[in-house]
Image (cartoon, rainbow, N blue to C red; front, side, top):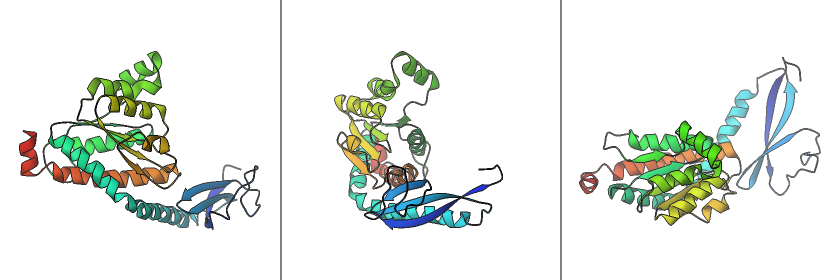
Amino acid sequence: MSADEQVQWEHRTCILARCSRNSNGQCRDGEARLCFISVVGSTVWCYHASVLNSRGSWAAEIAAQLAASADLLRQTAGSTDVLAAAAAAMADALNAGHKLLLCGNGGSAADAQHMATELVARYKIDRRALPAIALGTDVTYLTAMSNDIGFDAVFARQVEAFGQPGDVLWAFSTSGSSPNVLNAVATARRQGLTTVGFTGANGRQLREVVDYCLLVPSADTPRIQEVHTAAAHAVCDLLEQACSSPSAEGEAR
């Protein structure tokens, strides 16, 4: 591909049963072009790379990706019961004087820091600060642990140090199989913390070891992260309301 050529993504949908790829990565219609697959529920979204000299279709591609995200949000709306239960457990912990610990890797680390900030600073209204700590944000600690002990233990060690019975660990992992996240959950359970997990369609490992789990029905990492943010914002909204009432403030004092 020359430097002045542009890449356009051609969007189309296929029924899951009809869309397949052979060992050479060809899509079901046999085109010898790289086929990128994103699974959303029972639909497979195929993105075929083709070389064009125009960006005229970029707006259509953006619209298609936004539509895929909206569709996944609608599907995840069926998980509101588990989200409400997780939010209630967090609210009970906060109003009893306990704290939240949050963790994740990469984009999920950003989610953990984002939600901790919403709770400590503010989300929508002025109220008392809510104790929430995103783990793994201290680069000195992170590099020391990774170098001297191992990256798989970075979150578990902090849970061991800061976690107390009655606290809540909120773990984000799109794959649901990150060793350092699973180790943190194991340590949290041993220490009497309530555990909440946000993961994707393949996150059964995480789902099996936490008390409450949001499992987004997709294996597409960006789409999962978008739903995690929307769902976590809804949880923050509920926590802010539950922990800013006069009775909640009285219980905290």
